[in-house]
Length: 276
Image 1: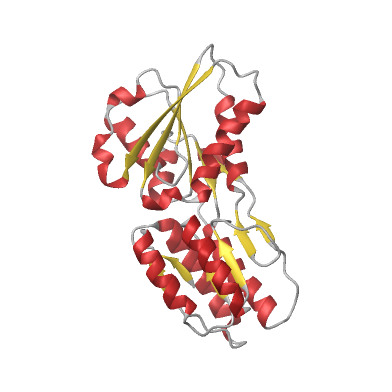
Image 2: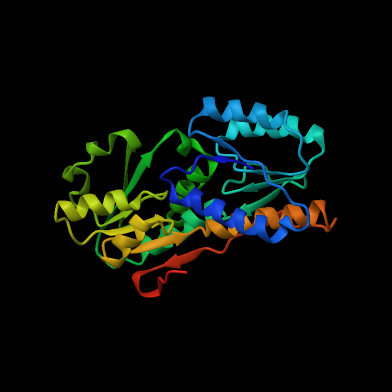
């Protein structure tokens, strides 16, 4: 397992929960897991890529967050002839690797459709990118591309205007009320929608639709308070579980496995949310 450290990151913690569920289920058949956790920067990522390259194993579950480094690694790793399953981010679509996760482009396209449901004479949409270095990942960028693609394809929505703001994780205190003047909807293309919701609530700014990703505790809290309107659930536990399941089928059972398993795009509202 080569994954990001999950300290304070509920999405990745839930991936591990799914992996550990599979580990218990398949452990009786000889499946043993070894974990390598990298920090959210390219220096740490490249360090652990080297460790995994030299590690003796029968299969690899991999979250290829950083595109360029991951492509280089996989090009070298294929010489080892070891099955690889990618989760969360799909960087190479071919017959050599399996990907389990959402179609990032389609999830952004779906977010665009949800935004388009607003019925007003004019709609001002803010794409608020609260990022760390990790968000140079292809999945993050594909969501934004998919979002814009919806409106490019449906040119009847001429009353929609778009603006973008980018803030680093370490600088969320840069948020200010001026960003939201005249804004009707906010699209947050990652799991940080709760940061926007918290700011709006603290500053008593109402009437803005927020769309984001993932059922983190913070996001769900503001969903239940009607501050976040829609969350697109990526079902990380299922990704982790299926990753091990697929490797088990491939390595032990010698069964053919699908090259792509897209997790359904699940729209969560306050009315249909339920804790598992």
